[in-house]
Image (cartoon, rainbow, N blue to C red; front, side, top):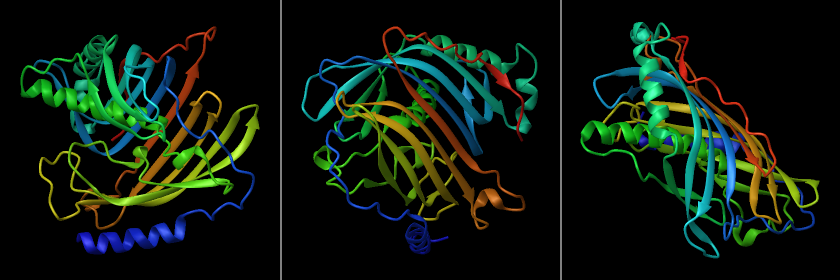
Length: 325
């Protein structure tokens, strides 16, 4: 599929699938993040089911091709600077559990309690627990420039390994991104729109094309809390999750369906909780569909603010889990 035909199809899909605009109502004010003087602890879970494999690697020797990843972690975040509209936020990974599924060709490396994949995941847990990630966080909810500050980068393997970790954590933190309206108000519309929310993307180090548009409906909850209910659709194209080159030809195209429900605190300027699910179905012309029924690209995320006095949740067990395909 050429880029021109891809964008034409994506534009039509967006027109047909985007929810109708909500009716005007009393303006909602306070739709903006605030980080000055704040420290927040979040429990975040992410599950990503890929149509292609990614490499999960140890620092030395071991590597396994995986088609599912699951992160379950607690992160404490605080700003490194004070500003009205943008902050560099440092998030410490207080505790983490990791699970992964090896693709069928690597199934032998994921069997038994001391499999190669188990060893890699335990190494990742040890490396990631207590490490920090810096995120550029704007008052309108945009996140960017995810960077680990302490992981080894001694050689090419370290760099590639750290990049895979960074991509997976970008996917996990994407549940926190909602592109809030300018000036922190919906102007009485009861809803606002966003193009290409972070969690609708593809976890790879090469660029993609396409567009996913969503609408966030605002509904009253209690006190200073409001519901943010998200629906949307679109199409994204990508060369390949394992390709090292960016080409003009779109190798894989996915029709995306997006839904999420969250609670935002207008007074304190933060998300209290959010759940999101994204499902992408490969088109028949995609490379991953050649001769087979392509597996879907599915992402599921949850985020919950932990406040003082909350009992810390019990995380999953770090281990390899059963092979999916």
